[in-house]
Length: 372
Length: 268
Image (cartoon, rainbow over all chains, first blue to last red; front, side, top):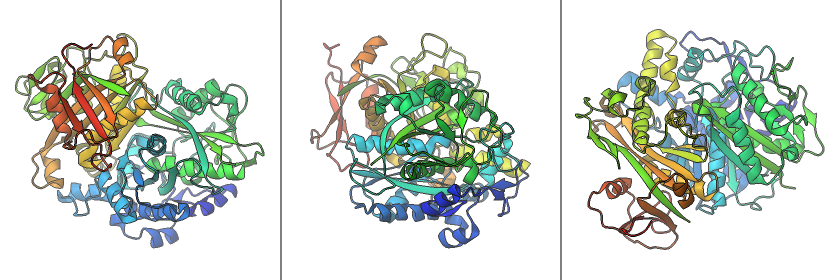
């Protein structure tokens, strides 16, 4: 993976455990007048090596992490499929169309074209698609891959999530008044919005037993739902997220008290974090299951978030260590939940659930367990 | 597992319709999708319709033709999934938002909201109180077939007992000219209500066609053209028990076949 904390999952993970934050004053120049001056940008030393060409920045990022995931998994690409998760893909191409009235010959403004080019570059010849379910895209893509593998429609799927910062994205969230001036503070009393990030992540979903790497994890169950409530705002009562969580638990065959950690979406906006707290409390009760968000480390990476954070959840299981909710000073959600303000080793940590929600009312939840 | 298509709705460059009615754009008092007023589509009000982007409008009209209950009327469709497939997504909204950014320096929040193709799912979910699983996929020209295959997958997995499988493209002439030089605009949608037999019975819906996934080569002459399915469903003089076969995307031809069979005249 690549995030504001660097290149490679071990690098990102070790910096998270050290409490480093990658949300910094914007380095690149964006043209508009926006309501923030910070974001989780890819570090310049990584950018210069991995994605130096602005015209193909998103694809190059995705290609980089996808290639690394294939190397680490040592999977045969023949017969493998690919799901690309992204909200806007190669967004500079859209800007080219708007300015010149013509698309570039590369054509990766089309998300499927980007997915197809990735699959071709890696020699994957199975089913290929892009998933674009707003900020839940990444987790919905992992679930889609798991669904296809479980139904034996394909032997293995490569899931790639990628999104980059642009005037489009910063301007959009700024216009919605959703951005925090400084680094976001998920679940904090003084949270004031989200911090955008950029990055890419890739992981391989295959039949249980296909891998014995320590960072592999077992997908036990999933749930996806819709609030059917508001087009941009989350349900005030968390009904949709409760439904997704309960569906994931039911599929996993596990009771709520089997969950040792909840990886929240935790964007740092007032309504999202409050909605999540209500859902977590309703589903997990007063047991005090630890909750944290990863957004404070590298920002909200949009379509990449679900893939990056699912991969990092596998590291949580491997090391039995839950990263603190960076930015938290005083818990500030109205419903009592146990938000971690310090990175913590939990010896019995075996099972977790990760959740993501997004515009359009979508919610997704995935239950994961240690493989050994 | 046998599933059933109980309703369908469509939008194209001529108009919109389904099993209950067919209306041309001319009859609707509009030149095309981009100009139509909701009151010409349905008697049930939809105040937000004028604010939607073209893709969401197209999807909402096709789904309206299925005759689902609007939210607040009857029970919520708690066990209904929605799968949307599209190739171009919300290209018009994307370009409109970029222009608004350049004109105002800040961008329009209203336009930004509809720069995600899955917003169309959100609009359908709100209008019809559908709280089941969602999936928005972009699979190129095979996106329509992918919606049917993924809807079948969700029902098979037990995630839903019925699924709205919607494929849609709504690209204006201007936007289409930028991405496909020979194109003059693309407007089409097909919405299918795919259900288990129990779900169809519970909702008191008769079925139009059965849908079955076959793993043998039942139809070597199968098609990858989803439009064939629309013509099959909309045919006024279709033969009972007639079938068509579709090949799902990304699978070698014949390895999997979706067999769709029209209802025989004497079955239930």
